[in-house]
Length: 275
Length: 213
Ligand SMILES: Nc1ncnc2c1ncn2[C@@H]1O[C@H](COP(=O)(O)OP(=O)(O)OP(=O)(O)O)[C@@H](O)[C@H]1O
Ligand SMILES: [Mg+2]
Image 1 (cartoon, helix red, strand yellow):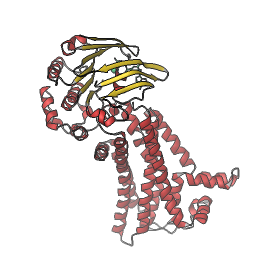
Image 2: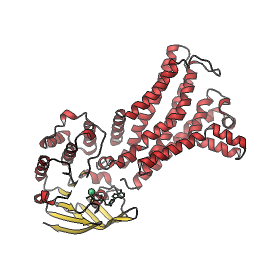
Image 3: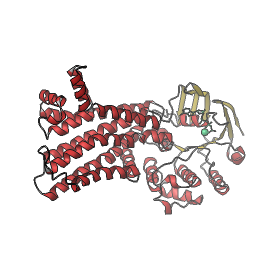
Image 4: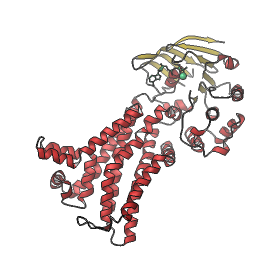
């Protein structure tokens, strides 16, 4: 445990000095600031105003860029160290593979989750400056959803990073996964449904399996209880699950998948050659 | 016996890189391991350190399996890799990793570095990979010598050192506790001749020569 925390801490320190972390923080913090300056929060669109509207837009952008950011920056963490022989040196010291792997994961989680979380907090601060009631329920839900979205993609990145020997292949694989998941968010699903080539059940299942879609449904359901903006799939889900269970599912499902993937990565890390 | 490799075979992508290697390292052994590029020297050393799952055979280091008991095995080994790794941690952070994970005292590392004319105290904030090749090597040597081990494994440790650094390094080696065994991989036997009492020659994944000198 001592070594796990040590490795997490050193990974965080290393990330804090890297360029990607800087870009990452500036992008998310900057987005919030941009929304604020351009007055997104002042306009009334579809009935949402102020902070709520700003957070909604923030979440919509996050859905697209957060997964790829996490994948690109993290997929190299194990495979890159392996390629550059850093792993050979660091693991010649008596640290268990368990401490090393989970320590890296913990450290990485902190560096990918905290900047988005702080951007959200920044938004809340802007909201307070403008006055008006704070949508606490929404802030809480969004923090939880960002947590689980970060977690699932971190798990995926660690999985790819350990099972694929080369960084290039791992990077390529993450792009493919990201594009596929993105293509299958509601618009594409709706298209499929309308063409009626596949059964509704299949479409619903696909939606429920895709963590990006699940995140989106969870995020919007709070706002727009009827989910009119995202279409029939979400509407169907809401109808069958009910809004509370839908939110619970959208938080728990990504965590479960993230745990599963990161655990599979851990198994591969232990069972395969380290170098 | 400190380390035993019995009939160790390992293939990478269908090619046998280690072919039934038999090797023992006893107490007080000072081994020079030689052989052409690609002979499998680095591979057998990595197998001893538990980095590879071997296809067949058996490896025991201090009586334990280096994969199943990696923490116990690695506690007693100091290792310097063939190429200094581009570690992004600052020297300060690297030292704290080493210190906390392996119970090495920082003072000892500073002392060993000083003896090789490496001034660490003024560059603690510098990332390790920004040191010069020779400085990196010296720091790795200082760390390895400061660790309380009974087996030192050096994979071509002098490749990057200037003549003076090399001399200093050999001088330090003469002071290593005689109870501690060493395994050097090297291409220049002449340089360490006085320091070793056994030489092993590897070629095509086999130990082809193993003699006391
Ligand atoms: N992880 C790996 N994957 C695939 N092939 C490998 C791997 N590691 C080593 N090899 C191959 O195994 C062979 C032996 O490599 P090794 O590094 O053990 O040689 P060496 O004796 O240390 O050579 P040198 O004197 O050049 O350092 C080489 O042909 C190398 O390409
Ligand atoms: Mg080698």
